[in-house]
Image 1 (cartoon, rainbow, N blue to C red):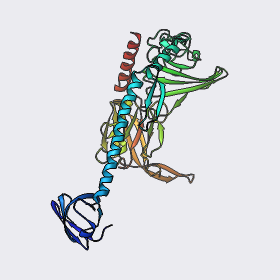
Image 2 (spheres, one colour; image 1 turned 45 degrees about the vertical axis):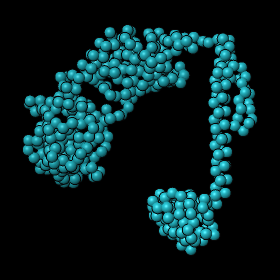
Image 3 (cartoon, rainbow, N blue to C red; image 1 turned 180 degrees about the vertical axis):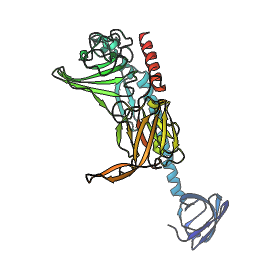
Length: 427
């Protein structure tokens, strides 16, 4: 590092020194190197005016800077650096020329070619054209199976491709495009591994889980011929829409069908517990006053002062008076399983009232909610009973499970979907 510091001015060739000895360290043609703002500048000297003043060959283009440290570079040293750069550039250019010649030899040459590296060393090996010729010669001697030529279908040795599995033979798994032999096929006949499309019509044969209007895809997962499982996925079916079933076979004995619980066949009651579902409605005092955003969670839509899932589409819910609600459009309470649940404390503290329902003469449901009241029986027991009518608390709802008539929106849509798919499969 040279003595003193410099003052550099933007767009000026004049440089002022402080504590410098320019006349001793520098001469015209030498260079000074200074770093400003993290950027190095190499500046050529035109004249040395005094120990504290010099003029540059061209104006300094960096930002104005005072107190800049610097060091001197004699022109002889700079000439050596320049010569080294010229030598390195020449070497790099030679390397590029070698690369061009080498690639031309490898691409277009035949037999063995010699390539020269930038350091003067060389390498001899086969050109790419020779590789191709050798590979073709080897391929002439290879015997390929029929699969190599993409024979497709479901016969032995064929390659199976998407949508090209062909007509089924026996009970082997396949993707069938027509309903030929579907209705006569028995669930228990499907013993080979694979996915059976349109194979089974529910209600036909031993063990079918549904009715004659229900169609399923059946997937057989087999470990051995005496131990395997079946998964049944509904196709177009009002009874099992969106639901899945499975069973197992061990030594020729089938287990009962079990249903997999999903969002299609369960619902969350107002306290968050999971309940088996079919058509389900949720009753609140009013849409404006409820505090529960999840009363209209995905799958539920508003239908008055409450919501309903897709299977209960078409019902309407009205509030007649304090604690009295009417539900229309259903076929009454569910004929199987649970039917109605009172509002539940979302914090897990239990029921928030007593609920009851009755069928009206017009076919609707009248649902009443009462406050809980406890009395002491003649036997000295504490008994829960009905108190005054009350509206559904804002932090909860009433759950109602329904049967829907055949002409409901859901059932009609399902029948149309099944009819359309069956017609498509038969065409």
